[in-house]
Image: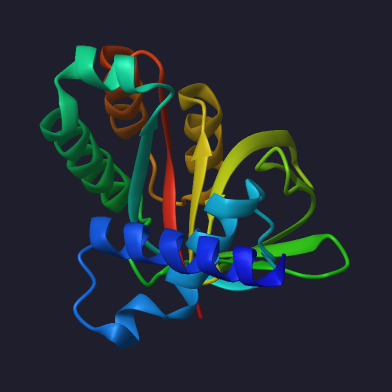
Length: 198
């Protein structure tokens, strides 16, 4: 039985690494590829989100491949991600200048420039959902796509607009309108932040 599971994991690792174009045996057996292989074989994704996660850019996800194809495929997704990144930068949210620290006691800090905001969170790993509660803001639900080193924190567009307005000291109505119109032009799209573990 154990040998069977080992060979299934090895086969899954080889298939997954082939898709991600691994450059060497070292790449094949890195922590993230092993994690993907275990998740593929077991069908379970359990990732610890505690720690500090630094913002690296905008993240976008279509709710289905069908919606992605209707929007124009990968080119449309890349274009939308670039536009969102530009608007977040105008709101003062730039790569390396925002981070989220999730603590084991279900509290978190969001650091944007010199602004430090605290709150609490509840995380459902099996559903890949998180609820963030800032002191002055009603809870925000988000989807999490997470590995041991990267995380996409994705919101419905109206929730992201509220969060940008709350987090940013530079956001203005023009920036929020642009993000809103971007979201409206790609119905069925979730918007948010791509983060890397520090």
